[in-house]
Length: 139
Length: 86
Image (cartoon, rainbow over all chains, first blue to last red; front, side, top):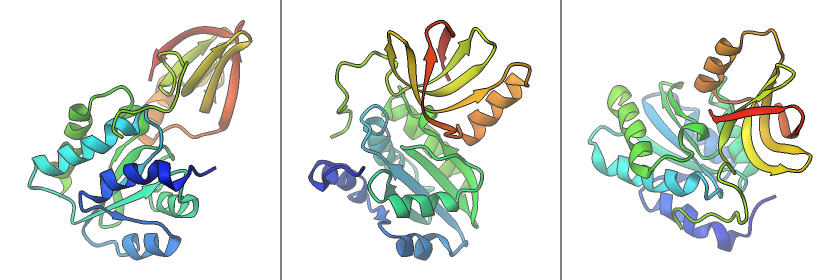
């Protein structure tokens, strides 16, 4: 069940203020991801403070610390935009759903994936390093 | 809001993905929710039956994630043996 918007607004903004485009509808997702050319990074945001509380600042650190970035940056809020989140996952092949998580796609294929279990209990610096490694390898 | 958790009165493993070994030989992977008197509550968990290739299964889960075969399950206290982070 989605949380009240008032509760999650700061969590959305922590990501969108980085210049990451939020995908709120199925149409948003298709418009963003149906075009397979180039690199696209999708950050699956989450209410869960256990893991997302580290993942959001990690994204900010990653984007600030490398010149090699995905061409397109997107986010979807799991547990809030249910249909949009399901649609994003339809683009992620056999990767299982988890949130927070992040996927880097290149020409429509997932080339790197950071699962929730790779985020839990890790510092933003550690998570950011994983993101930067993916950016620098594939972007 | 970074770092703020909305979960209170949970143990240290709450929300962490773990591997639980069962006395039956089953292996359970999923998010630890809490320990109750009757057992351990896990969320979005997958189970490997005894006799199957455990290492290959764990490697696949590490790469592709954990299929949420069970949105919530309880590993009974008499089944629970060990737990470690995934």
